[in-house]
Length: 308
Ligand SMILES: Nc1nc2c(ncn2[C@@H]2O[C@H](COP(=O)(O)OP(=O)(O)OP(=O)(O)O)[C@@H](O)[C@H]2O)c(=O)[nH]1
Ligand SMILES: [Mg+2]
Ligand SMILES: [Zn+2]
Image (cartoon, rainbow, N blue to C red; front, side, top):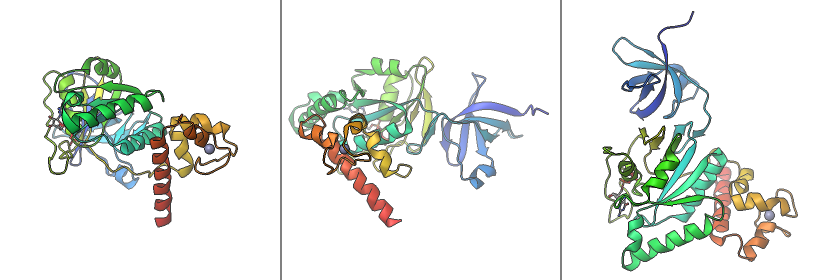
């Protein structure tokens, strides 16, 4: 017998053991839910972005009964059913960390998500002095290295409300996530995109040169025409838990493309003779920084394997 109490919705926020479910029938407020104990027993946990079946309890709260199949799943940041990952990196303050950018890209390629790079705080690139210089260099390098690989690059300034429109359009009709280090301006960008939105933001620490982890939970924000964006807490540590060493080179677009031309199958593009990637590196066609990060990630994965 169908249960009248079973309703459909989307988890829009996860906080302190509660899941806030937006009912499928619009105009209603999200309903505060607990998850059934069975999820924990099975080692599953509901994620923001999950489409769920829930039931109402007597006190006006609810219970998440079932998680519907996911089209995608990210562990860090923890979100489900995302279609587009927006990697937010500030051109400076904090300084653009290219190794972290490559690491993010590896994860996104592995998850098979559409992705764009958003260079935030572009206003700082016109500053005088060292900061401005490093910002301009970061912009130049991203355009020179990542655009040719097919990554779309946006430049935004929340402070000046510049570059927001093209990004906003990219966000329409899909579920996206803003991911990036603390302090790069993810929440500020959402505030600039959505009139009336007042997500909490915080100046970065001058002493440490990084953000203060202002956003502490994942939350979906409606940004425009059918667009939802997950604002997420910043992080700078990212490990390769679900990724095997043999998957790594596939997650670097240039290596994926070149490896069929390597002499040996299973070439690690490290030392092997007849390696098409090393040849391209020599010729300056593969970026040396990216290749160095690739080797560093491989080392990191091997190191981790040794420890377990
Ligand atoms: N100059 C400049 N500063 C900005 C811009 N956007 C954000 N900021 C500043 O950067 C700091 C951090 O911004 P947040 O939006 O809190 O950063 P966040 O990425 O959400 O940080 P977490 O929530 O900790 O992950 C704040 O002081 C903002 O005012 C910008 O476009 N230009
Ligand atoms: Mg934030
Ligand atoms: Zn090779």
